[in-house]
Length: 413
Image (cartoon, rainbow, N blue to C red; front, side, top):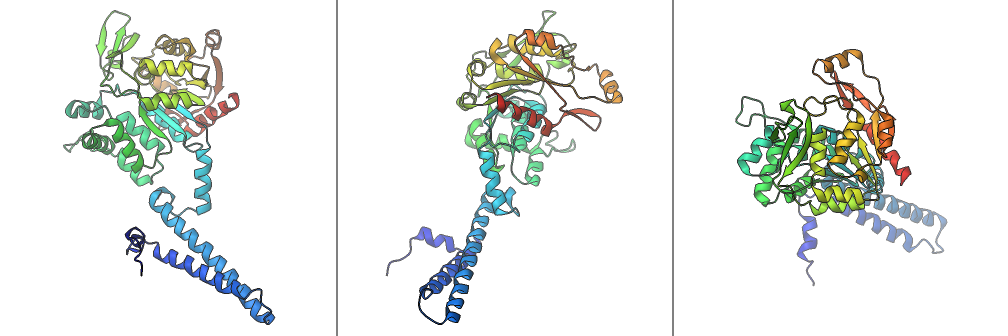
């Protein structure tokens, strides 16, 4: 008698939780065989009726067994789906896989907000993220372990995660000031350890993406250990992304060092295949433009057939965009890349409560003025929409509203 292959036997190991459903499915098949064996015979109608019941019971039991078996697999490989109806899980996965191919370029909290809204409609999302950050936890880990800054990457990973809420909260957990890990978030430490174990920051991101069951992918714009350099209108310069806005001077231009840093192949591939490319929202000089300073990234966006959209910030940022209008933001993007970098600019036209505006004015932050004619003269179409919300007295981008605005550009393809 032939022995069953060891690979098949493994499925019957204790604790896997599928033997009962395999057994139930098998029982359903047995009932189907027994019921159909005599169904066409000339036996008494009562016997035929019982055979019919056996067949129907077999079908129901077989469907139930297969359904439970599939749910067991899905629950283990996609933990966020536990408790959901199987048909809903399959429908959602299929619909998301058919969603538009969107590339979002930037960094900071603005990009993560956009991603959290987009992931509801598509799993074909690629976040191209700057690695010029050198402040806070990211800066300390960068210096101590010679790794690329994980902070912006972590925020984007969590934003696209389909993992349980507790796991997302774990990655965002920040140690308090009374510990040796003061200021560090768990996610930053996790990415740092993964980089040390794999010896590859890009591989560390991909492995972490599996843990968080991402709806899309997060890609660093370059794997070079770059630094951001700002040149001010008074002729001075500062090295370091974290120090640039603190100088509170008018920025003339920014550059990367080293200047000829290559783009990651995955980023270029995502841009080439994109249907929509979104720049922002986020800090103009320290989150968005650093990606465009990687020449291959800027060239790929310019050459892309995708719809190219810039989401302008609602308020100016002290030390970066003091006194800037919307057209000034666009001019800075073009001057650091090329004229073909944008097709549309999305500008907020929602009302902001007076008391909130006054709080921003006290911090030298003002409403970004929409100088529409200047923007259109630059060859960029303006889309005015309300995509802001007030949260704890702070103006935020509404992820749902913003995602719907971005998705509306599919009609332009």
